Amino acid sequence: MKYKKVVTLLSNQIGRLRSKCVMKIDSAALTDTGLVRTNNEDSYLNLPEYQLWAVADGMGGCEGGEIASAIAISQLKNAIVAGEDLVTAIEQCHQAVEQAVTDGIGMKGMGSTIVALNIKDKQYQIAWVGDSRCYLWRSKLKCLSKDHSYVQLMLDQGLITEAEIESHPYKHAITQALGGIGSPVKVDSVTGILKQADIFLLCSDGLSGEVLADDIEQTLCSHDKTLEEKAKQLIDKALLSGGEDNIALILVEIGTEMLK
Image 1 (cartoon, rainbow, N blue to C red):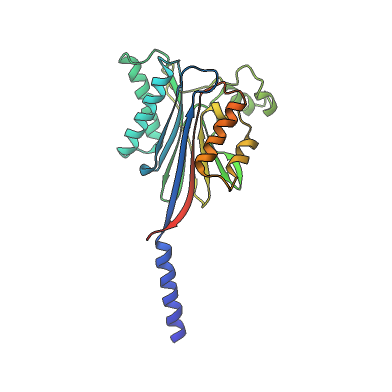
Image 2 (cartoon, rainbow, N blue to C red):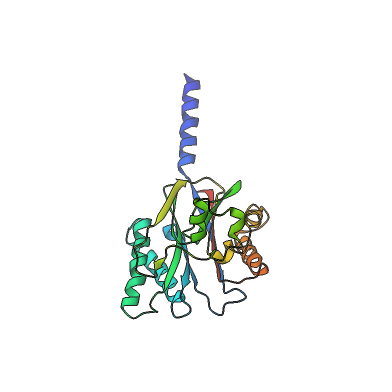
């Protein structure tokens, strides 16, 4: 009988300790104009208090791309804070960019890609439009998003191989974007369960188009660098590869901590 009481007491204590164990989420965000462009059309949102992170890559030059990506990021924040789900929030970003053009803000045809991460109740959701990407490092690197691009469509149809993408003349052409030509967008999304030590990478194609997946993985798997150092190293790798485009990235790392 005493043995059963001891077991019960220990179980209760373990249960209380587990209930005090909460996720600790760290993030680091960086952007760089690159070595060729004179202006930066990339924007990002690092909003850990709402467990929301996003990268947007604008199109249309300094009178368009910068404005479109900034509008997209601002609208995403407002929508999530107001309680919208991630997909609906991104649809509203599309409408906001289009409305800006109607109101005479920016320029006709301006647009932006977007990729966003939202965490709720130990689950993650990724949603995107365009070719900005989300990778997950969990023992190995995996791309969670799928580009809305012409080369991806051709790859899916078996018209080209993975090896042909890098040299394809339309490798930067996307099939949909926020704003742009006034067509509706289809927001794609994926969900999953978080695990301790997960690292998410959100980035524009200024990184994914310049740095090989193996090199990204090599940086993320390093145990002797802080998250900020890893972000800086990824930027440096993109610059060393030519830095032909603007670069924006966010790293989000999942851990645990005990409440005091």
